[in-house]
Image (spheres, rainbow, N blue to C red):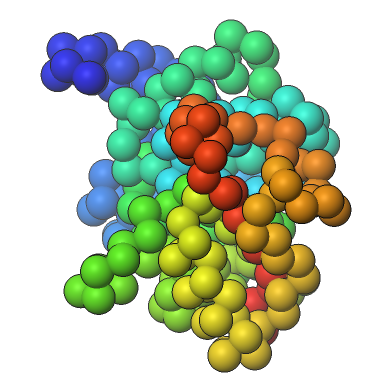
Length: 224
């Protein structure tokens, strides 16, 4: 994507009522106004809040929002030019139950109060295979503890990935740390019994993976 195009999308994001782009300084200052107030002041309802981390173009957030009108969805990514697509689609389709937050995932607890979130989706994250990159892996111990803080006591996390490495690493970690694996499937399109929500929505990259005959894996779990 050219820099001209990126700038155009950044500018357009600023006009969307469903996009928030706080600076890192605003986040770390600890007084982000929507923290603890997403239901009251952003969605203006009491419906459950679901996050999609590393939402990319926002297809999953928008797809979930259109399927589940009684749930609120927030797509989170540091690349606003990417989720411009999802934000624009949501505006065009009049979906008021989905928003987008431009920030780094390690800053989550600055934006959400303890127990404010019902569910988290992690869709096709970078598996960060090199050992030095382990700290950036979105299902490592540190990230799980961040999620636990903002999740309700019965909150769940969903991981959907084309990476066998990421699937195996996460399953091993969950079992090793005593978390509750509710459901695991190493090929959701070939094995029966996959939850409908997992196969009904496909991201741009997921369609490419399927064309390459890559298996799409899925884990649903609770953090103890």
